[in-house]
Each structure stands twice: as structure tokens, then as C-alpha cells.
Length: 209
Image (cartoon, rainbow, N blue to C red; front, side):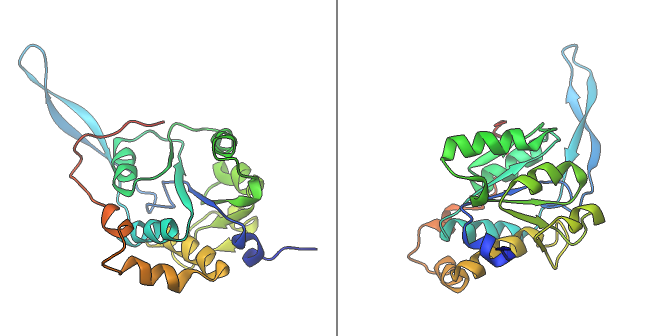
């Protein structure tokens, strides 16, 4: 029996995302920042910046309300990603991962879930092993054609423009939970929405890997 994308989505307990090109538009800004040196002079260090979609942040809240856990697995290492992960209270944050299935297997062991209970959202060939291994493979609209060809679902929006939200809403819709989660997200009495996506301007950056 061939499973549809909706059949696969109904089983999902964990949603994992690549970062660059998925939760961002793929642009990596690198610019110099002045720093004080030990001898009292001023030097520079290079700082990496990325832009994230607020729609994706709201989507993480919906996922949490739908009983799912969320995480990122990325090849690069960035303080910006660590800050965004802190704001969203992501359960899984793996940076510096050239081979992403290693992180997926570690998450499986920690959470006691099967591969068919994990969704992976990617955009480039480095994501293919995780997409091939996980139960639901999602490609964003701006993904490479090789990646789209192996996806069970392709989002209508591009990375950094709400693609993460698309993936989460697709899963929740398949589970029959989307409208319920939306209503819970705007319920003043629900403690989950106010606790998530609270940006603090980069204070106390975590460094989970």
C-alpha cells in the first residue's frame, strides 16, 4: 500500500528543519563588528546575520499546541540561530551537522520515536539523507529540483517566507487539528502562546549543539 503525504503527516510527532534556505531565504549576511582588543585598540570580528519569518515563529507555536516537538539541524554554526532557537524554545538544536541523519538518530533515541514519526524540511542536497530516512519529507518552494523530486510535499511558500509554517499547517491539517490549534493560539487563557517567540535582542545567547 502506498502512503499519501497526508497519511505520513498523521503519524508525525517531531518536525525538524534545515535553517538556511528553509527558515531563512538562504542569504547569509557577514559584516564586521568593532571589538576592544587587550592592548586597548579597536579591532573587528565578523558577525553572521540571518532573517527569519515571523509566520514560521507562529507556526512553531501551532506545532506545540498540536502536541509536536520542533527542532533545527544545520551545517553552519551561528549565534543568530542559537538566539532564534531560544526565542522559540525549540526542543532540538543541532548546529555544525554535515551529516544530518546522525542528529536525527540521536533525536530518535532520546525521544523514543520511530523514523516514520519524524518530518524533515529541507531545500538542498545535504538534506536528502534526512529526507529519505524520515517519515515525511518536505521540500520548500525554493528547493533544488533534485530535492523537490524526492519530497512527499512541497510548500507553496519559499524559505524565509513562511515555508516552515506551511509544513506545520500541512501536518496539523492532516491530523484534523489545524483549526483547533489556531483557536488555542489566540485564547487568552492558554499559557503556551505567550511563552513562545519572546525576543530579547540577543541577550544571553545559548550555545546548544
